[in-house]
Amino acid sequence: MSENRGGLYAVIPAGGSGTRLWPLSRAGHPKFLHPLTGTDASLLQATVSRLLPLADPAQVFVVTGVAHAAAVSRQLAAVPEENILVEPSPRDSCAAIALAAAVIARHDPEAVMGAFAADHLIADGERFIGVIEEAMAGARKGLLMTLGITPTRPETGYGYVQCGGPIGQGSALAVEEFKEKPSYEVAEGYVKSGNYLWNAGMFVWRVDVFLSELARQQPQLHAGISRIAQAWDSSAREEVLGEVWPLLPRISVDYAVMEGAAAVGRVGTVPGDFGWNDVGDFHTLGEVLASDSAGNVVVGKDAMATPGVILRDSENLVVVPNSGRLVAVLGVRDLIVVDTPDAVLVCPRDRAQEVKSIVDELKEKGENSYI
Image 1 (spheres, rainbow, N blue to C red):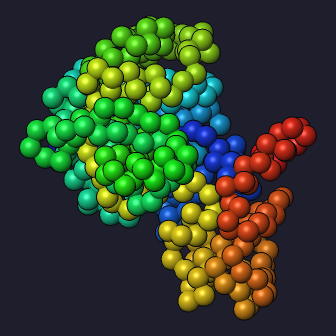
Image 2 (cartoon, rainbow, N blue to C red):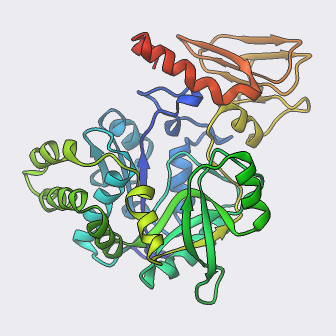
């Protein structure tokens, strides 16, 4: 194993098409492959970079779909090709994470593994690493750890974790229950109580502990993943993967494992306050990236410095020039303007969440070339 601070195996499930970031994010080129970080790095590249203090590239695994494997490999040249695990079809997060855990366990059964989304932004990388290190300490004791985010507002778009008492010496807490996305009133109560954290979907555990909990709660999924892992380093890999994968339950790791593990006292959390953002839509992107003096954000490489965008007498815009055409905007405010070679989106910033409904309509109409 390489010499780094933590010896963490970092697993990055890279799936989903980010429909609220349409028409920039598409099924064939999803949001994690785009440079939405305020730098030239894609969200995926930024995710791997921020984990380097704990997991060097040989210990990074990415689970992604057939359509994205080549692009992922190109963007992450330092990650060994055999660490790009290609799932034949999307089966939600539990199958993806379990596959990586089982592959890692073949070589290092007690390895500590972290699962991190490919498409989150983190402002304070150092603090983020500190929180992971605390979570690793809990994982070594046999707990399934989740990174909780200290809420900054009563958010209805996230799930929550309900915290119990402290575990050990640090800031780690027991998790009593995972809570679904709440109504505004319930979310307000959660934030006021100080007892709840946002569930960011980032986890740290020992692979043997996770796999035994998977076997306890999801025996069918565990059996299928075990079969695939046994064949992983053999010539039968593709055949077994093709046969078993489509039969695996389509379920998230939260539902499949974490909720049931919390119910029997096997889950801990470390509260984090490191400037976390899940870049769910263009309005959010506009809030986290640097703006000009009028509050306008232009997304993309050196976009403000090129003649590709002219903004006159306009405020609080999020403009995404992605077609090579000039985008000129005059006398408007609080809008999103996204220009791609085959589709243009214009909408008010406060309706950014609804962009997904356009994708749904395109699906209904069979206009798959735009999705």
